[in-house]
Length: 182
Image (cartoon, rainbow, N blue to C red):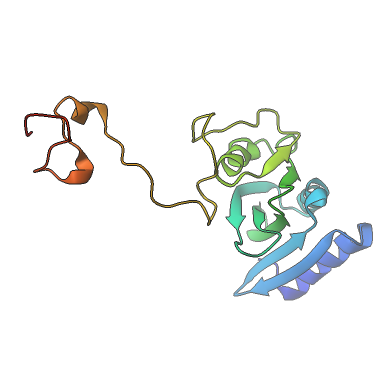
């Protein structure tokens, strides 16, 4: 990880190029993090690529409920030559959850951005194929948001339906409407 001084030097170079780019820096427990303005993500990642952080290891969605801006995206970059890591984070409000896609520059972000879109509702503008990847296309809501209802409707699976067994009632109970126990 860049040490605290190295992190501030990187942030200083970014601020020299674009004063509104870096929102905050944090060096905590040996881990470097730069918080940036959402619309500058491609420029920042390009700058860090030039500094040797050539591997985009992962992209994550975050929910800071009840704070606003609530939704976050976190990029983990690695410098394979110096064995170094840096985290780039950004936050967007739920009423305008748009972030430029980095997929054109970092193809590994393709499915990760789609997962964040599906689970958190962050829209990656410029993504070549932004659609749900885990949930059905007609699904309402975003299951990884902190205010998403945890309960739900019990599912009666097809192989159990033939026997009238409802797994939510236990093994010794039968589904209403069935005449025979399993």
